[in-house]
Image 1: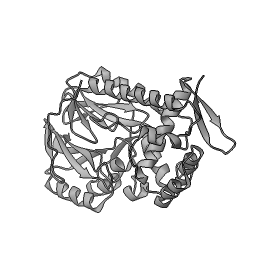
Image 2: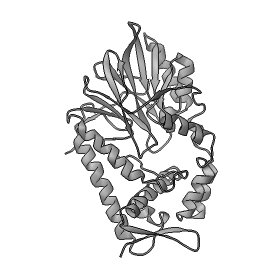
Image 3: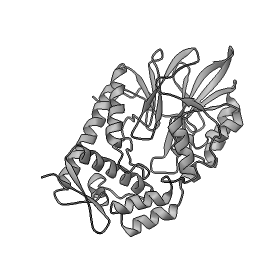
Length: 342
């Protein structure tokens, strides 16, 4: 079943659009092929007075700061809290800047907060070099490896500063926003401890990157956890959305708000199972993750996309290995390859 899109036109940069009572949509630019992120402003209260909750903050660009300046200047009430769904730069990029501007605390899960700091500071296993070593072991060629190395720590470009304090969120937490109860729903696979927010009274799910209306969520394996079964974690998390009513309005981080959560979950599961089948068929002879990029992504990839594509290929190959459908071989040349199980 295809999703329904009740709002076909996104708000212009710096503008907001109310998509449900007290829930406002704003869109910020990104410097990538995926050129936008959706952020959310929720009408709230603080000590009986009007306030606002911000969900996600945008990438650390001067243009985005200027748009936030315009939006904050039009708010007639203070910001009470800043909720960050996960550590990726388009979500946490301006959290510290907004915290300084508004005085509001940042709310995150612990794994997302700590991973943000680990990646920012290139702590053990989280920096550019560990990522490149993992990709080379999975067959990435010298030219594309050099292009990735040239980008250095691209994370810090989108996240110029990070919050030094935060309020910790846990799966299942409930807290009021604007007189309605919102629940934290943690998901795995896309990032370490991604927090979506669900309000039963409003019939709204702020899904973040866990559930998108058209494109598939990136599922990667990080260098610090090379054996992670990220895809299984993601699919298990995805199934939890089947508990929600079909008429739930999903507010994703990319694309348009949509209705049809159950159909989208089914489509994502089918998409990944098809990818697994294609990869399994392609491994009649031993193949590395890099060998299989063109199989998974039959289009030209820029350097930024190669990083995500390699992570996604490794995640799918790990899943096939754990499912007993592929056998991993560590070659004498240091390259990891996979072949179909006879």
